[in-house]
Length: 273
Ligand SMILES: Nc1ncnc2c1ncn2[C@@H]1O[C@H](COP(=O)(O)OP(=O)(O)OP(=O)(O)O)[C@@H](O)[C@H]1O
Image (cartoon, rainbow, N blue to C red; front, top):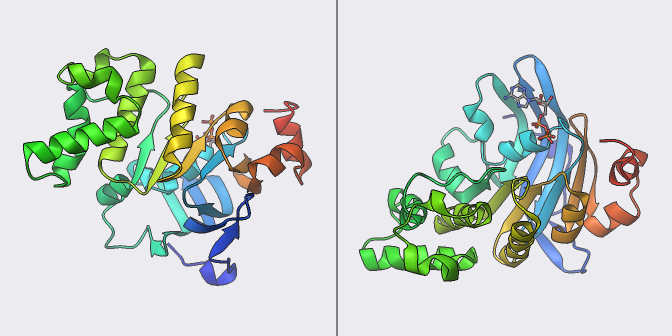
């Protein structure tokens, strides 16, 4: 990674719509991403605030998921993918040589479009991460970690009496909350969500949206969504991507009511995309 921070100094805090100062959790400068010879992202600069939901919107193929994956180095797992630029979390270079991407992915968890519980019990789905990261020494400690994570994910009341049942036996919405519990159990700082509701029905979607709203008190959350209504409901910040570039980023209310760029207004009013 080349450090482009010197080219584009940014303030340490940004003003939130509420007027409350927010810490920047993740800062990206001059990010370019290539898949082989094809460039998917161009010169992306962005400050992602802590304890806030930031939505990435934009037409299919504009680079939302690619940028999301830059933040926990999931692009490392794609053959031929190359990331240039600087991405820091609390000032720490996420692409530093000594940084272990596996540990990073515990700190920056990810929830995918399709719920992907392990083929294990509900309990084991949540306990797996804390076990490999040594976050619980005894069975009692692990029970506590599992219960706390399931409570935070709003699933405990529905599964407390069947923790030994397979996670894959839950409904789609419950599976997605189980996956969120699994991410929470390893004490992440950031939770990335790539279209987390697109495989869910409206009731399960509403439940996840409520959960996202609760989780933002404790975590920095970034969500990719194709639903303008969802972005407007759950996020406080919105970034509009178009053809691999960030066209506009700002308070969600402003982006939806008074966007600066005609491409943004055309997209959110459904004129293209
Ligand atoms: N693994 C890959 N190998 C090659 N090209 C890729 C890969 N992943 C994404 N791309 C390309 O990079 C560009 C950006 O894709 P990306 O998935 O980030 O967009 P997106 O905005 O998330 O799209 P969608 O909304 O459809 O999920 C697209 O042109 C896509 O075809």
